[in-house]
Image 1 (cartoon, rainbow, N blue to C red):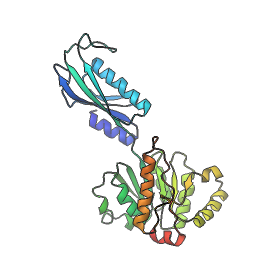
Image 2: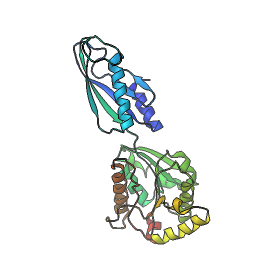
Image 3: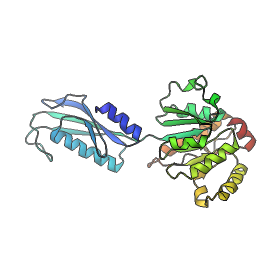
Image 4: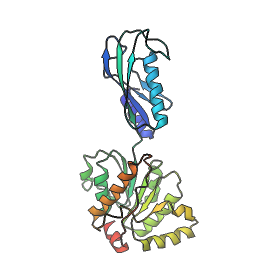
Length: 286
């Protein structure tokens, strides 16, 4: 498998890796500038020349994976019999520069309910390198002409028409942020209930007011959920200091909180805290 397919495989399986590129060659070397390989936790794809050169690069790349390094690293390797050689000697006589670039696991977000707020949020999130899942029980909400604003998306957009939306929870990746903002409070409640039964999922955000959440919490407790379970749900969602009830403003608030969470050192911010929304308004907007 060549390096490009390996990058695609790592992204599809949501595993991190490191892309190693030969950026400069002086004298004789086994590969030319531009040669690449991909290093994963337990596999290597393609080659930058084999021998001590490649083994050293693989070792350094795996150290980066262990350390969750997010910044690129450069290495210069001399290929002669006087150079350090922990993995055997290469006496080509040249010198090689390598660039090691982390390939992180990108965030995944599932927006349940592509109404007015959901579509505005999708437009913003589509400008980021994320796995974006859009789910709605209404086929017309996901018609191509309505989603044409996402045609130039940087994100990978996955569209799910799901008459029973909670069934789509099984199609989103592990650790996915789940944002519940459908047009129907009954759908919202079923989604939150099912999401809480799926420990593999990431944070759960629910659009709506504190009154809506109090009703939901009573129902969820009656369904057997504990207080620790309910603590997985953040509502309202968005940044609390961004006010306003228009769909675009709410979408900016929610997206900003998500991005802030992704930029924390661990990338594990919940990204789902903030703007209060009345029930009546949420029904119209979502």
